[in-house]
Image (cartoon, rainbow, N blue to C red):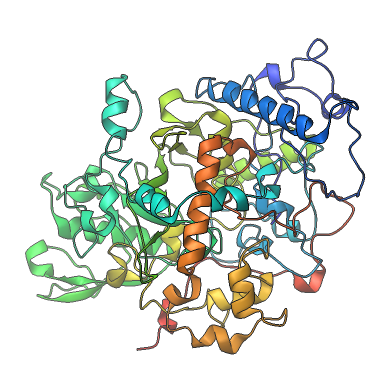
Length: 585
């Protein structure tokens, strides 16, 4: 999954250094580069199998390791002490390239497909990235060929063993969300303040139709998590909520009306999925005063909406554009630990690893977005490194009309704003990759129509195929990737579904639902929680936030760009939308 390495125009002259200077490793006196020395300890196993020769020949290895760890701690502290907008000291200027892009594919195991796709013809999509060729070509810059995600190679087994089960269970069930908003207000925060009450309680914060009980306008929806980083068996539980601007929730007279809100949410869903019709809760067209199902008559009870050309109610002045959200649409995404009880049942716990927020502030026509994608390709050819306008308390501007900001745990478990480099990590997925729909993922994977409104619940959810395929989406992913995650490093799923190194489809098909397919055992859940807790304690997210228990084997430390990631026959198309019509009754 080889991320595009150069995303947008470099707007700061202070960072317009040439790749030749980077490669030569100029010292501080000879360049203004903000690329800093790689201070994270390297794994003893490298692509070239060469050995590092220590400059401190007279110091034993244990002492060297201690010195290196002290350097790391000081370096991380220096990065975290920078302001959230500071780009003056970066460890990894290519943080937009995620760790999964360094997977050893062996030419046949394809984790690239969930991100890098060719443009779908004759659909009128806004995404013109057309980067499916990256399944067969490492499009990395000279900086990007080096894997900066050093936490992938860390062995956490001893630290995990030292954390009692009761301690981690107590930790993950503590609420670290409720204090975030008051702390931001107290410091005179000028950006979005978390405004969904009791979100730490998960499903209890919403009614049965997904509407937040606090009246904030947030609506939870049920979706199948994107493979495979967001599968609980690989480290985290999560939830996603959507909110449309106030006028999408009100009548033409400006009065709040849930029916109007549901209709406009459904219009957005139909637009993003490019559907003509979708189911809705039963509504009375006569009472509402307009046609919903497109049959040119008013009826007392309809349960289907035909996609209109304009939104309903006070938003009637807004045109509907396929594959695009209206301005003011916002998403709230919380990434959490893995809740697990004594019986091994998995649930969404109170503690959050991250709180992520994005809001669409500008609308761009598809033709203009096409220019933005072309600009990205030009930057890539010119060797420009990725940079994004910083907005202080408002996060980063992704240059496609969205502002994004994230909060992550500090060492004692409280949520803090991400610094620039930590936020830069998010840009890799929410900017220029070919598979997204208006730079987003989850909403396109929502259960269709009325049945999909409500807090995420994978129990009873069937493994339906993505459009264009017949095999279940999870089963297909397992088959194409050759493992339970991008790195083929989930030992539990490898043993369960790949007993002889080959996918056992019969075993996959025995699973009664998505919950059974992608949930970890109690032991694995506890260990994954502990593994991530060590990253939180170290605060070294700039070296990676994957909660691997042991060093990963199927990962390169550097990339040989002369080698194709995948042989041609193993490259694959992937439409992230799911065909819920294939759900068996």
